[in-house]
Length: 339
Ligand code: AKB
Image 1 (cartoon, rainbow, N blue to C red):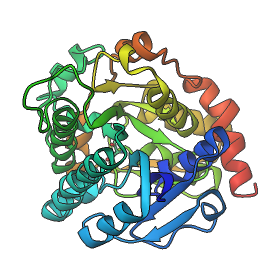
Image 2: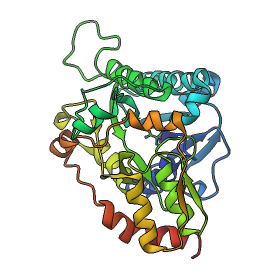
Image 3: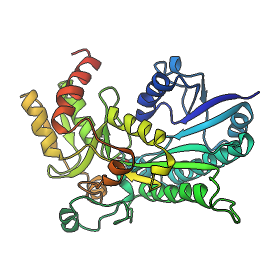
Image 4: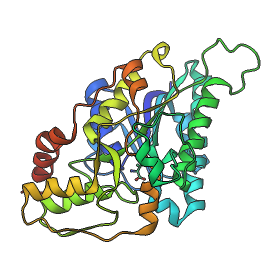
């Protein structure tokens, strides 16, 4: 008999780190962790098996398919927005080709064990593309269906994979009876910038906020790559992890969307600077704009409408700007660096 497991791709990434220990704590599930690099030693004790390999390697996915019975897939592997602009074709291969491979794996699994496979997909505010700052300032909270005209390869990849997920959930090889459950139960979330106390992101464009906070706490200077007034939504990593667990455990009948907006709070880069300087008066934070990265964040919304997530599965962030710093980021990051 095949071993029953949940599969996590991109396990070494920021979300993978937090998600794996929470899944293990909450569900005592057997977790198979897949990442391009050897799985981090902190993650290893929480997983049944760790596999270093590529989601584009079909032979590896066939092997996983043969060995395990998979009930849920958390497909976290991706190249983020700034990195994807440097190698757009590679980003497309990983972000789209990898997602297609994992959706196909879900289909094969569902066919063999007879149950739909739950599939979590982290989408992003990068799916939005607001044409000008003037329009960005006029939009208060962007709705899921507005301005989906991404300006980055990563945003295009995420938006298309949302559609692929909906297709696999609702239409894939369904010739007649649409009332039957699909083979894949695809659930996605459009994350804002995420801030963790224990990891620093790399290759993203919302990275300026976590980089600034981690640098200030270590008494390192930080030269921020966007303008002081740049505003996008953020949330803490523990809230992001909880949102994934809540969305994945919500009854399917409550869900009116395939993909949900979600947020903690919105803040400008200078609000982060002011906060860090109020705690560390010597914090050396400067601003030198990188035009490419600035244009990316200028096309992202300042805030998102997450009322559908609130209504359908009870989403509420625990952390807003103030308590994110007081209760989580400042104590957590200080402890992390032994300060
Ligand atoms: C990025 O900056 O690319 C990501 C995102 C907002 O999806 N953090």
